Image 1 (spheres, helix red, strand yellow):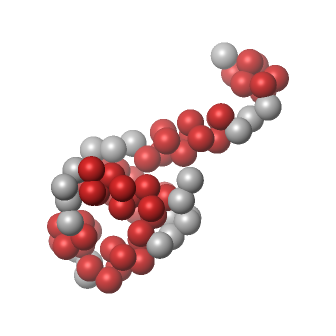
Image 2 (cartoon, rainbow, N blue to C red):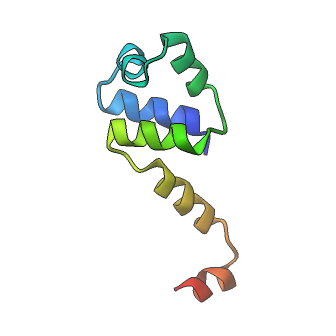
Length: 78
């Protein structure tokens, strides 16, 4: 998962703009564009964005990780 692209997708789905996110994060729009291009993101920033968008990106990352585990590891977790 490319986290920056996923954040941008969720923003579009919710009808939010980059200007809105920049204002919420108390930053400038160019920094938001930088977030969209990131394949990795700081956990604290991801939590802030998740809270603002009411979207659990961490769970999406965990789900993707779990889907890539070999079957024997998946079964031991259940």
